[in-house]
Image (cartoon, rainbow, N blue to C red; front, side, top):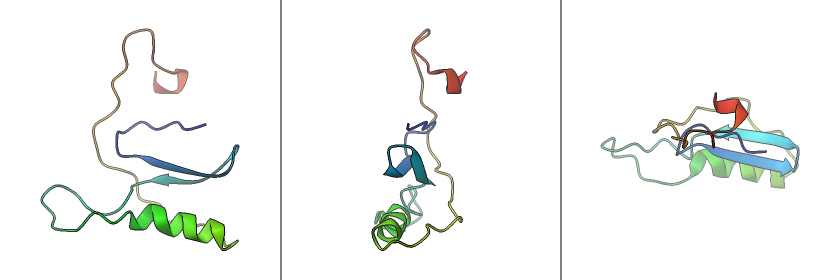
Length: 78
């Protein structure tokens, strides 16, 4: 289950119940001149496909938190 809390947060699953990555898409940010590449998520996907462990060094995403309409928010966001 994806429990994202930020609009830019990525979650990668190797199986419906195995969360192997939760973090940023890449290091790009508005104004930092780093191109959008998806490098962080790609590295996790490549590791899973190669049968290797995903690096435990996962940077959290930076973005706006997800706003829920009152009464529609999931339990984990309360």
